[in-house]
Amino acid sequence: MSADPAKGDDFRGPRHVAIIMDGNGRWAQARGRPRLFGHHAGARRVREVVEACPSLGVKYLTIFAFSTENWKRTQVEVAGLMSLFRRYISREAKALDARGVRVRFIGDRVRLDDKLIALMDHLEKLTEQNDSVHLTIALNYGGRDEVARATKRLAQDVADHKLLPQDVDEETLPRYLDTCVLPDPDLVVRTSGEARISNFLLWQSAYAEYEFIDTLWPDFTAEELARLCGSYGDRDRRFGAVKT
Ligand code: IPE
Ligand code: IPE
Ligand code: MG
Image 1 (cartoon, helix red, strand yellow):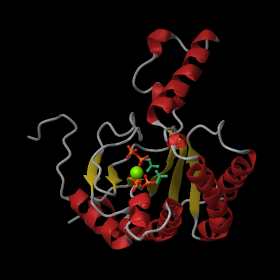
Image 2: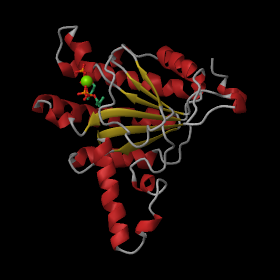
Image 3: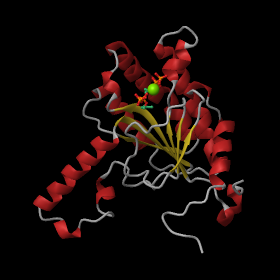
């Protein structure tokens, strides 16, 4: 088992957990309800998971809410999700701030509507002094899109003579990613039984541990997160080296 976070140095749990919150549609389908019913149920799970983080020693929680590929869904589902995000941010802002949660958004904002962008900006600003948990919400996020946007900015800096091509190394690109201020995830969890990463945190997850679990996201609980953090502590992370 991982050590108690209160014990400091002995702590072996993940500091940064990233979650692909999948299975809302199947959860609703199993109940004979529309997919959006599942998305609403899924959104309600987020609070419990965020609240569980401090006692588990999880300082950073990153959640995948909407991918760059999710625009391929029906107009009804996409519009319903966008409306859910607006409602979620408006309703949860106060409680998140009161709990000392710092909220950030990653992903490309250009396709999002102005009202949603304004709410996202407001929540980021409102919580910018907080430090209990760093919650990052990936919205219109795609790992490939993020790397492409980062490369574009990096190339512009080269064109502007702010950066020399020979100075570009693996420390350089992450400074241009949406996640530039975040540590890499230690543990990536995907719910719903699918064993793929669907374009999530491609660069950042190079050495993450993965957990693919069958639970559908609306059924995910703080207890399950605690169990996953516990088994993470038992893993032997070698980062390519051989332990002597
Ligand atoms: C995850 O649940 C939420 C989003 C992708 C927005 P899904 O909507 O993908 O649910 P399933 O995979 O169809 O069950
Ligand atoms: C990944 O789930 C995106 C989010 C959880 C937001 P999807 O349901 O969109 O992924 P695929 O289609 O199963 O790969
Ligand atoms: Mg899915």
